[in-house]
Image (tube, rainbow, N blue to C red):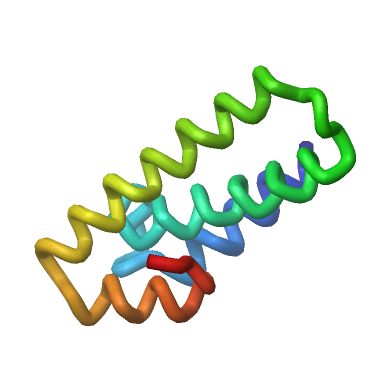
Length: 89
């Protein structure tokens, strides 16, 4: 649990726009991408975890909506995040 909190703090520190930023689109996308990568590895081992897979699909959909928002408002940040996180579009 402590390890997950430390990882989350590192991600927020890397992508924040200002000192108290924890909810900008870039931070949220980075956090969701981290969880999606973790769950993807989880499902390689636990192939029959269908309830968890539904949660993964919800995370992917939420990240997609945030990326669409970012694409409408700041195309350069959107393209940078796609390249940095290795997200296909």
